Image (cartoon, rainbow, N blue to C red; front, side, top):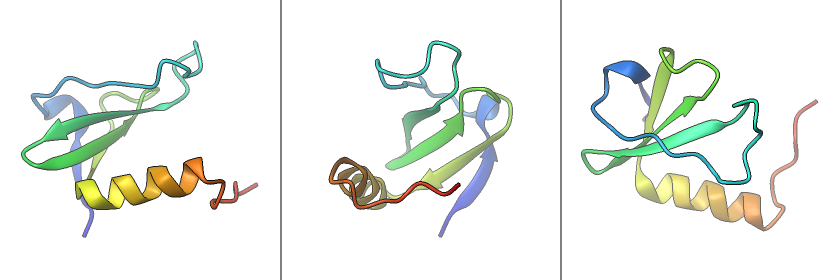
Length: 72
């Protein structure tokens, strides 16, 4: 189940990949109460998507393995 919260309302420290776009066009992650929250760096006051750590780990592993295909 995904819960949507306002990103700026969360008391977290957001992190993004060191290889991210210098124009802030990326996603940022944070840890919050045993979950992983994700937001769009271009819209820091927009929604934060809350996920279980295992789901995020599976997504990152599939991405690293090239198992996800970009949508045009």
